[in-house]
Amino acid sequence: MTHTPRPRSHRGKKKRITLVLAPVAALAVAVPLMSQAGAATPSEVTADCAADSDKLANCEFVDVQFKQNSLGPNQRVSTVSDNCGSTSTASKTFNVSTSVTRTIQLEDGYTAAADTKLGSSFFEIGIKFNSTEFNITRDDKATGLQFSRTDTVKADSVAFFMWSAKRTDVSGFLKATYKDEQNGQTVFFSPGEGATSVHVFYPQILKNGTPDGRLWLRNVTCGTPEADGIQNSAKSLRAEPGFGEGGGNVTDVEIPLSEVPAS
Image 1 (cartoon, one colour):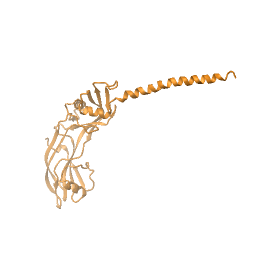
Image 2: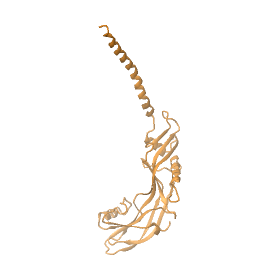
Image 3: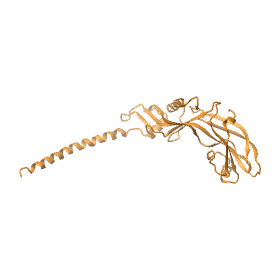
Image 4: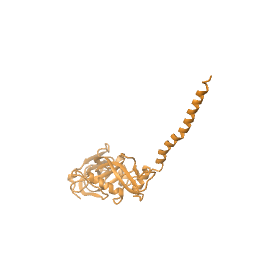
C-alpha cells in the first residue's frame, strides 16, 4: 500500500512534460509555413517577367531540353484556286507568301520583345542552339518566304498551298531574381525549377536565307464538307489538317524546297 501513490505521481510528471513540449513542436511547424506565405507564385513570376517589372533584378529562361525539326502550325499560304464543275485539270498560278519568327509559349501566350530582360535571355539561348547544321532565327524579326508557282489543279477541285515551318523547340522554365527579398528569398521559378512547360520556338533557316519547313499543294474535291468549309469561309485563313491528314477527299503533294526560289 505504501507504493501506490508513487506511480500516480510519476504519470503526472509525464503529462506536465508533454504539455510543455507541444507548443514548441507547433511553433516549429509554423515557421516554414510562414516563410512561404509571401513567396511569388508561378503566375506572378510569369506576369512580372512578361511586364519587365521594375521589381526584378533579372528574369531569364533556363533551357532543359530541345527538339530540332519540330513542325509548326499547318497554314494556308496562298489564295484558293477554284476548278469546281470542270471535268479536266487546270494549270493555275499560285502566289505563295509566309513568314516565320521566334515565338514563345508561356501560360498566357505572351511573346517577349527583344528589348526586355526575358527577350535578351531568349536571344542568348538561341545563340547556344545556332549551329552550322541548324541556322535559326533568334530574335523577333520575321524571315519571309514569297514566290509564284504554276501547278496543276485537279478536275472538280479547289487547290491551295499549305506550309508548316520547321523549328527548334527549346523547353524549360523561367528564373526570376527580385531586387527585394520576399520572406528571405529573392529567386523564384515559373512554373517550377526543372520544368519543361515553357517553350521557345526558333524557326530554322536554310542556307539561302529562306525558312525551312514542309510545303505542299493541297487539292480538295468540290461538293465535299472539306471544300464547302473552305468556300463558306470566304476563302479566309482557318485551321487545316496536316500533310496527308485531310482524309479521302483531300490530296496532298509535297513540294521540295529546292524547287522554290529564294525570296
